Length: 308
Ligand code: GLV
Image (cartoon, rainbow, N blue to C red; front, side):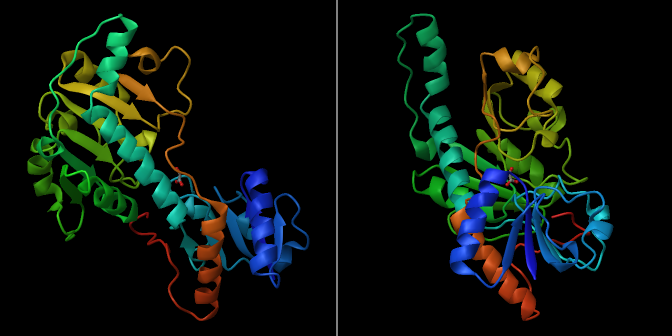
């Protein structure tokens, strides 16, 4: 029985070491060193190979090495094979750190002070208390919830929006299409942590973002495909939005001449907000192998109909 890893090879070596320590009975291989392809029962990949079915005829479970699954062409994975996305504590911790620094930087006007410094200006601004700053998270999955739990500790006024109703202590929860407008109207800092699906592609467009109060800021840590970048530029230009922090863009990277690169009110990071941590991820994958053997649902198993 082989577990095949097909993603970044240096991370693959870390996974191999962890598997050797924690599950020596599993034959672990890093792509392209398949060994006997018929022995491969489990595949972990950023995206599955196009000829998955013929190449690995006996694969039983396909794991995404990322939290998102939108990079997967699910039509390449036969319908009887479960697909599992990465739901592991390392990814959560990274995302909590990134979003917290982004919200605090906006809250304490760090970007405005950066612009002032470039102009050799010394201009203290009034400090708003966190309890007056309204933060809203789009998407209340594991990541959205963890981010809100941490932001609550700073006393931000926290809200979240999700497709289906959620109940989170200390967070004003909005659900469904009708609730989007009131959610946006009370949000000064909007954080996108939605999965990218056919229903959410391009969701951050002029219509939605115009529903935020004037001067609001956007943090996109979902996928570049969530955001209409032209609409963002227009709203920054008109002053409706004050600042955007983008960890994801479309495409990645943006072309060298793209106006977002040099926009004074935009911060771009190269899709580093959070990544799967081999040590914590391997624990979850091993737990999922046990669950699969016992016929129990796996952590992060996706619903193909919903696309996440
Ligand atoms: C990274 O973007 C991931 O999906 O894990």
